[in-house]
Amino acid sequence: MLVHCVTNEITSELVANAILFVGGKPVMADDPREFRDFAKHTDSLLLNLGHLSKTKQSAIVKAGLIGYSQSKPIVLDLVGIQSSSLRYKIAHRLSKVHPAVIKGNFSELRAYCDLHSTARGVDGSEADQTPKAITELRLALEARARKNPQTLYLATGATDLLVCQETSLLLINGVSELECFTGSGDLLGGLIAALLGAKIDPISATVTAVSYLNCCGEIAQSVTTGLASFRHETLDQLSLLSQKNWSSCIKGKIV
Image 1 (cartoon, helix red, strand yellow):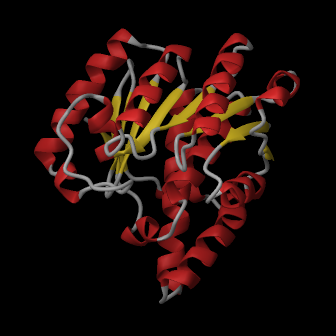
Image 2: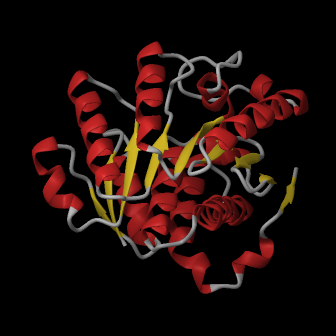
């Protein structure tokens, strides 16, 4: 699967390597003059709102429109929309290209749904992940899924909430260290896009990508001590865990 990534420059190498580690091929092209040519060959599209600029905004919107016109499955990553009205407006504009998956942390998805968020910057807030807050967000996303049945919504955090027209799931693998290195969320967007590009349906692609990354983090935590070594081991496990019967470790429930 060939994934076109219009993503955060700060983490673009990490995203590209993550896609490679799971057997995909990334194209990290962000010049709109090339988009139509690449769209002839790519299998999916990742749009990430991180590290925004006027040029980047134009590129993301154009890539989304071209991807939609070519029926490419699109992953939209809502980086920082809880802190930026500009990113919020771009996110809702891009929702009109009917992404297969719209993802972000709990605070970003709350902002997307016009719910109050306590987050600062681009990170999620623990206060946005209480049982009451999760239920509130789930109900809001279920309402959106009924209006937009073609889109699956993913909120990431200590647990991960997946909502689509068919079902709502809580995935409970993972470790807190995954939130402590830059780009773990961007990386997840790349994994989802890679699986969508392999013609895997959005529910299976998202559950697989989220659980796979979280299981890699669980293994990394068990054999490392510092965050730098944890990051390195997590990335190693992206290329190793698929050789094992890892899916039996997935933990989650329907809500």
